[in-house]
Amino acid sequence: MAAVQGAERSSSKKSIEGKKPKKQRGDIHIDMTPMVDIAFLLLIFFMVTTVFRAPQTMELNIPPDKEDTVEIAESNVLIIRMLDDGRVYWNISRDMAPELFEFDEIQTFIKDKEIENAEDHDGESKLVTLIKIARTSPYEQLVNVMDELQLGAIDRFSITVLEAEELEEVGL
Image (cartoon, rainbow, N blue to C red; front, side):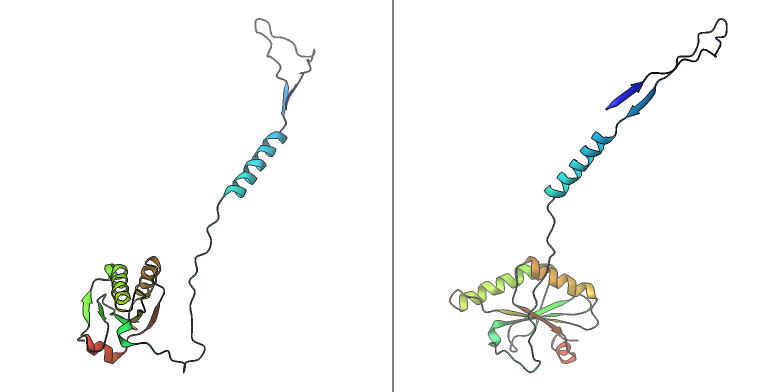
């Protein structure tokens, strides 16, 4: 708490005639203990009530052996080819010519294809999305694809490199 200690008057000072003597100020001592207590209480309160954001991770399933293969019907594989200039092509089977579509619509596009696939397979979608990205594509393009897939809750996909013969399929 604050405390004021009385000032000592010195009789050695002479008052100058016609002027009032200066008022003596007392020493003021402020006890800082309660303020420190409140500061620490507030600090602890905010630390306890703050919700910490959990780290966002993505689970990756990597095959244990390069020689292992998984057989999937060709009608269940949606192939998306991403070129380094930003163009995106899709097709489902080798018989189908790759068609151009906008990257901004990739979430809804894959969801629509999953619904179509589920209708063909008695309500359960067996669609696997294979994303092929050109080696010369900027890293940002891969990050954008991963973000879009995560936002769309699309969890059955693979990412690989777009080979030279596949560039010929899209007309390059």
